[in-house]
Image 1 (cartoon, rainbow, N blue to C red):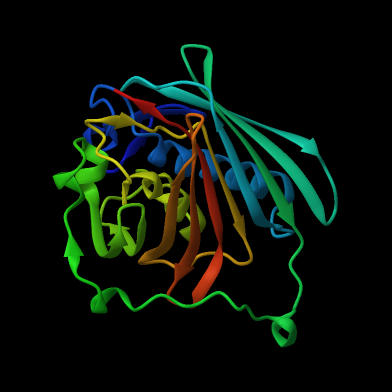
Image 2: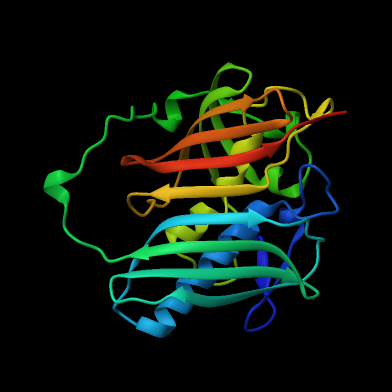
Length: 256
């Protein structure tokens, strides 16, 4: 059973694997972000065929929570172009927008001779101990994730994530599948117990220098709480080829 079933041209219904961590009767937003990315890619292929651009940024604003019910994704081109496009997708339930995605798509070019980074690589997944995230979080989405983690302090960890649950009941790209895991970052190395402090993220932005490879998705994550009720979860993203981009999530921090 996948995370979502397609139930219309732009309609998708969550399965039990989507139930959330803060509340199990609501969706965990992570798989929905993957579905939105899939919709952007599908719209792009339909409009441009083989003349495909590559997604370089995914920026999601989370406007509200989603019930465990059918939702719709609508896509429009904000800035068309031959080599650069800005595309927007809106995820709604019963006509109420819940998540807005703005994605930059850029033309590909051969910069192999220039490629490189000073970002450190992660240890291979098999070298890190298995960790069960359900010891901290409830919900179907968290239960569907497999983790290998090295936590050095609360709010500081390196870890790999994968899942055997497909994003949809249809073929999806490695990018869409990876996008469906990104939002897990905010809960994989907590600074404080979620039974004592609420710290949901109101957005998520991923900058990518290349498309993720299938398989394990790696995170080098630091969680910061400020003094004014705000926080930040920042990660460097990895796959089997090394660092591939960065991820940031703005938090609203609320002691219970």
